[in-house]
Length: 334
Image 1 (tube, rainbow, N blue to C red):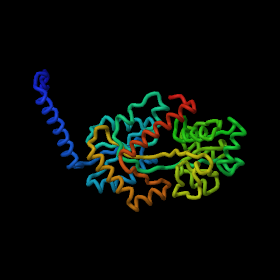
Image 2 (image 1 turned 135 degrees about the vertical axis):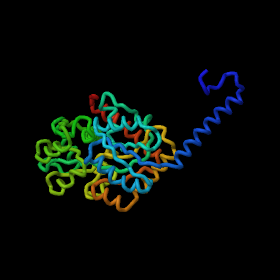
Image 3 (image 1 turned 45 degrees about the vertical axis):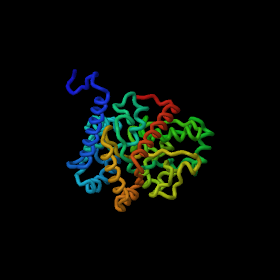
């Protein structure tokens, strides 16, 4: 028999005593680990290169988060494969709270637009909290003869398949948000993919492609300068940075909501006490007036989850939504 194994002839009460003792030891060990947590710097994997939206939103919370936890938060940028590379590194780390992942909305759509992803979001990670959401804005070139969402829908319905929309690429969030809009409104539009959001927005501004769901952070200056016309934000509530722009839901497509969001995950098996400690610290950071102001001024909305379970529920909802959108749009995994 292997060392430490319980012989089958040992009386049941002794076997149960041994099992309970082992369980108790695990609980005590996990409790002791959490009680002293953290006692060294925490590595936070950001699945994108420095300077992007994911990196910027993460670095806006790490100084205060580190201050509250009493340890430095070391940002480790691991961009690639639409966030998959960083996720794979994080899921292979020890489940001790010293390696975290900056989660992004693409982590819930990647399994349906890619042939293979190295993780199962629900199985391989312990949700901590969503941090912020960033809506996109449904826009068009000013030459398009429509003034609001309802007129846009009517215009597109009268010309099935003729009206084009731009995106950052097949399977990108701007692409999926538009496919969701097309499906929800019962339209037929033609997708024009670009290699990145910047070139796509540039061609909408130039009038080469009429419509796009573009990131609010990069789009608002062009809306204010009237280079493009805004019809609605993709979030469930109006954006604090642009309160005059209605939501797509209130402007004509009830129930529509699709945002880019960020959050924090830990490897599966991370002790509950550590997850709870991290969640509480995130709440404190996002309720800090200075932090909130910086996010809102930039067009993002601080949206911490009320509990890790609420964030887990969001992940499940997002997975189901994007699976349906991808299927309805006929997008083939690449």
